[in-house]
Amino acid sequence: MSDTEEGKNTGKLLKLYYDNKNNPLHFEKVDTRVLTGLRDDDVKAFKQQGLKNLVREISNEVRKFSPEAIAINATGGYKAQISFAGMIGQALEIPVYYLFEKFSEVIELPPQPVALDLAFWLNNYVLFEQLESEQIIPKSKIQANLDNEYFNSLIDEEPESETTLVSLSAMGVLFNERSRLQFAKQETSILSLVPQDDTDSERKPISLRDDHGKDVLLKFSKKICRSPYVRRIINSLPFNPKQINSILNTTPSGTVEFVLTWTDAGLGICIQTTGRNLAETNTIALHLQKEFGE
Image (cartoon, rainbow, N blue to C red; front, side, top):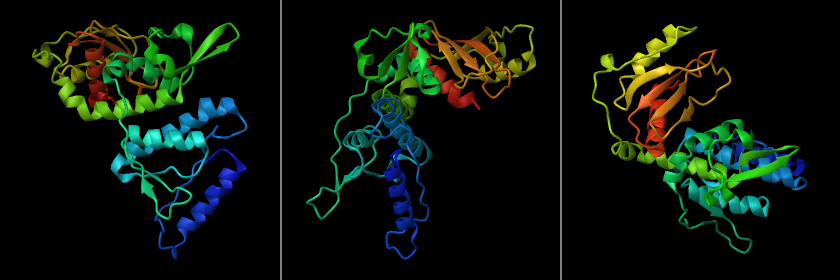
């Protein structure tokens, strides 16, 4: 519901209605959530928070249940919200329903083709995940080339004193979520195009610094070396205790910086994979994160 008193009151009313056991449309569980920034008296909050939070909330439900278990009612709300809700449904393959004022029946909006460049997402995966987790980053700290016109609708740039702050736009959040969904569906076929290393895992070189946590890293290195997409462990990483995503960085030459985010010190290793370019390396990184992350 919107971040307004009217929105909160409407949410309470709907919860009472669907919680009522005498209601033929009674739901077993009714949950309401305020979408921070989704308000009509603050344009900046609406753009930078409201629509993005709408995407994130629906995406979280998709990850918990699946698109088939979800429906979007795009009837109520701000016009931009209604339009964007429809786009979210089409992008994440969720059915979208609408009740026109003069119609007596609810109709399902027909799906529209949504363009998706999965290769672009794979080549820029680390940037998208960094912006998703940190949300706002100084432009000077971003390594990717943002001059690509594809970024125009996917990121927002906000000048602040002597720097420029970069964040995902609402469309960028949606693009990232749809790409995750499509990658999960195509992971096996994409990985089949990536070369493998058939060296026995026990013979793959492991090089680590004599440092705090070496025993933990050695155990993890032996485990991850079982992957056919890992050639060797190059070295330990500096500690990254604040890192949220296991994938810290990747390179076109096939290296992946992998952080054990479940360790207090943020222990990590640099892995030489079989990736021959950035898209392949990021594909491997995503696979390793799923298979060996915690």
